[in-house]
Amino acid sequence: METLEKNLAVVKTKIVEAAARSGRSPEEIHLVAVTKTVPPETIQKAVDLGITLLGENRVQEAGKKVDTVKGNIEWHLIGHLQKNKVKAAVRLFSMIQSLDSLSLAEEIEKRAAEIFKVMDVLVQINIGREETKSGIDAGDAVDFIKKVSQLPHLRIKGLMAIPPFKEDPEEVRPYFRKMNEIFQDIKTMQLKNVEMIFLSMGMTNDFSVAIEEGSNMVRIGTGIFGKRK
Image (cartoon, one colour):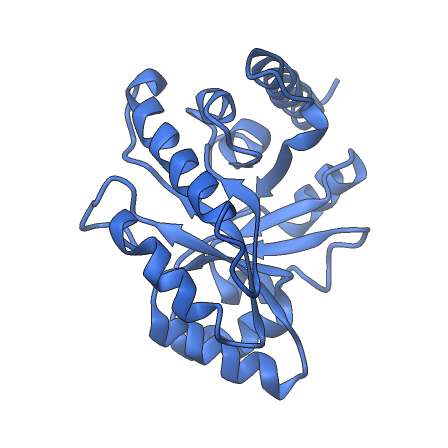
């Protein structure tokens, strides 16, 4: 069995096990394969093995891959989005997982309206309040979402977070738990243009814990494609 196939089998097994521990079906968990620096031919192999969601960190890099990789796939932007890249991002991606400011939301609204597209977005929460990371402060999430919900060409589909990195994933559990609380609270509000469907959290090091705490979308790069060169 090739390394890629083996890696994918390991990741899927861990998803099944974590879902079982949280009393959910593994079908509820969406696996996003993170393709940063991964060449198109390797991504194609992953798609041929059943991957349907691909996550890119950079708009420019995605531009070189989107037309090359074939299959029934969706591309999600999972990295920070600069306003000067929004026009391209709206055309390339099915979802932007990293909405982190009102000015960015307004630019997405403008560019999506130009091509008559309604753009699915996740609101990124800076759950660890880290200066090096993008995202809305957890305390501002509801007000922010209410403002964005007024923009007709955006659909808020949930939340995304990158908690502080810890060697021991158990140390990250409180951040995931807090994210799920925020997610569930907003879900009950029934806001216009807001469907709390996806809670995107958990990466190679900590995705099992994230699933146990309510994540239904995990973003795995190294676990699938190996360490980046």
